[in-house]
Every structure is written in structure tokens, then in C-alpha cells.
Length: 466
Image (cartoon, rainbow, N blue to C red):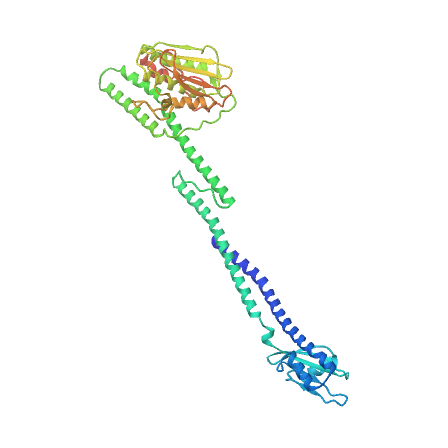
């Protein structure tokens, strides 16, 4: 592109220079010729008054000498009234040309060796026609023409070189952003997600750079969404893994029981590894279609039916309030169930056995509030607990549970707050706006009934309707 612009500029500028320089040079040459013959006419006109008064040779020679040069002027006086023909100066024009001017009575120019001559007719007092001949050398006709042509050529070359330089700079200004755009696309294709293009250059290339950077940001965001979705889905495995771990505790002793416990522990470590590997990005929650959402009270009752079995096994007292009447929220059933499982799982994982907990549902005019509280030691640093990927450091803690809850609330325009509960421990308050945007469903979960710990796995896998 750069050399194409240079070639186009060179061709166009050369044509423009030739179109103006050639006619201008011809005009200058014609002006030099007109100037030379104007001087000759002026010299001839200086002799004419003397010829109309006298034909004395001595006087005429003095007039010719004062008017011009003896070598460049000649006077041809014809014979008449007893006067002989007289020739002053050197004759260069042919006799026929002189006779023709005398006969016609009009000035004329004719070419001679080394230049041209101006033949000017002058009427004498006797009525005869004398002819004044002024020699115009070729050097006078072309005086200054060569210099003018050289100046025009220099100006033309300067214009061509200047246009080429400007075109080259413009080409660099266009090609450099284009090259950076190509390099950025190549780097992005090679997996360098941090590749960006400076938004500079011509308007079109600047817009292309803006579009490229936006595309690169979208690619990074999409990849991050995929990683976070994998982390969230993996985190949902924490609940069935808890069931498996509890079931293994009732297997007793023996090689088979030990192998089962070992397999469950290994599976739990693998799930934790997957979650920690994919925890750096955030998934993008899609907008739900018309009619999406669920009954929060029903989901709360359902999940408490599942966790109550484990609570009884560990000697925990619990209660549910506000879940006796329908509470519609714009959240997918599976997402709300996953959020409740994350909060209740944290209660069982981070509080001693026998610690009481409660789940309350408040249906207000502008928000639905779901509270999960316990009588445990509480959360000393709520901000750190809400930070994605920052677990407590113990086995099975990935730091994603509260972040899942937060994103569920923010998808509807709400938020999550952590504080102290009336039971003396931690309280997680989920604000959900009923008119907010409901996230898309990401799967189905099974319905449970109240079971003993030995049958929790079967209860968890039993299907239920959404």
C-alpha cells in the first residue's frame, strides 16, 4: 500500500508539473522574443524622425550611432529627385525583402544568419520610402529563456519529490496501523489473549482497531465465562460428594469400606482442583425468557427437607419461616437451589455439630429477602468471604459458594450482605428484586424427602418436577 501511494503520487504530480511547466516555458520564450523585437522597433523609431527631416549622410550616421549600434542597424535610402541611393550600416536582409517592405509600407521580420532582422519603412521628405534594418541576434531572442526553463525544472522536481515524500509519510501512517492490526490478529490467533491494537491512524483504521480490541475483550470474556461456568458446575458436585462422604462413614471397617472412602476423598480433591483451576473468571448469566423464575418458598422447603436429615444426624436444631406461601422470584429453580445448597453446606462445613441454623423468607414490596443464619462462630471478614476463589484454606473450601450466591442476587439487581444473626453467628442476607432479570436455568436437580443419613444418596438422586 505504501509503494502504491508513492507511485500514484509520483505519476499524478509529474503530469501536473508537465501540464503547467511546458506551456509556461513556451510563454516565457515568446515573451523573450517579443522583448527583443520591441527593443528593435524602439531603435528603428529613434531614426525615423531624422529621416523625415534630412538625408544628409553625416547627420544620419550620427543618429544611427546614437540610436543603436553601427553593426546592428542599417538604413536603406532609395534614389529620387536627383538624390542617389544611400546605404548606411551593414546590410543583412535580402534585397527582395527590403523591396517588398518598401512597396507594401509595412514592417516585417525576416530570418538571417545568426538571428533575425526587423525591416521598418520610414517616409522621407521627398515622398520616397526608406527602410531601417535592425539586426536582432538569436542570443537576444532567447535571453533568459534557459534560466527560466531551469527554474521551472527545479520547481517541478521539487514538487515531485515533495509529493513523493508526503505520499510516503501518508503511506507509513496508513500502513503502520494496518501492520499492527495484522500483528494483533496473529497474536490473538496464537492464543495471546492480551494482544491489543493502539487506536490511532486514519479514521477507518482507528475504527477497525476499536472493533478489534472490543472483539478481543469479548473473546477473553467468553473464555472467562466458560471457565467460571465449569467452576460453578463443579462446585455443585460438593453436595453429592458430602452425601457420599457421610454414607462412607456408615460402611464400617474392611477393605471395601476403606477403598470407598479413599475413592470419595480422591474425587473430592479432584473436584477442588477443577474449581481452583477455573476460579479466575466470572460466568455471564444469560437473560431468562418470558415466564422464567420459580417459587422461592417451595425451593426453600424442598432444600430444607434434604438438609434436615443431615441436621438431625448431627444434632442440629433448625427452623424455616416465611415459606408457607408462594413467593415468585425471577431466578431459575436450579440456581436458587444451588445457592441455598452452598449456604447450607457452609453451615454444616464451618460450624460444629449441634449448631442451630435457620432459613427465613421475607416477601416485601420491592424485594424478596432470603436469610440463612446460624449460631456458629460467625464470619470475621465478610469482604474476604465474598471474594471469589478465596476459601478458608481447609479441605473442601473453594471460595466459590458465596460468590455463586452474590451473582444470583446481582442478576436480578439485588445484592448479598453478611452480618450477625439473632442466633449469635453469621447471617447471609440475599436481596432479590422480583422485577429483575432472571438468570437462565443451568440444569435440573432431584427432589428429596426426609431421610436418614444412610439413604441420603438415594434421596438426592430421586427426580422431581421443576
